[in-house]
Image 1 (cartoon, rainbow, N blue to C red):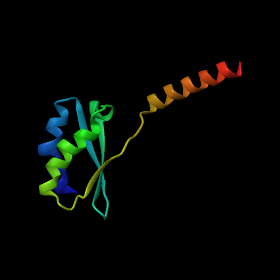
Image 2 (image 1 turned 180 degrees about the horizontal axis):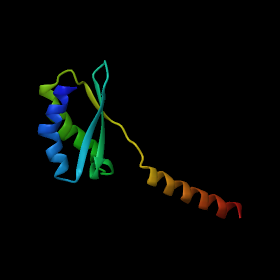
Image 3 (image 1 turned 30 degrees about the vertical axis):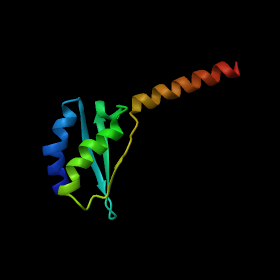
Amino acid sequence: MDKLGKIIDQQVRPALRAHGGDIELVELTADGVLKVRLTGACATCPGAQQTLADVVAAALKEAAPEVREIVPVFQADEELIRQALAILRKGKESRDG
């Protein structure tokens, strides 16, 4: 993963940071699936899948042929989960009366 980290640091991260985002390498599986987590503005961007294809995959394609596929890993923020639960509970209370 060191080689992948260098590519990410040199080619991918600057582009993502220019838009308020970043990327974390999570895992490279034995079958060549690279799991990444987009963070910052990239985590909630509707164009995240396109970013993975155009920026991340493009940078890794030639330099790391062992990477067959790039898959995003999503992790919900604790505050977001708390807010969602509050909304769901409020809706249930109003239905139950």
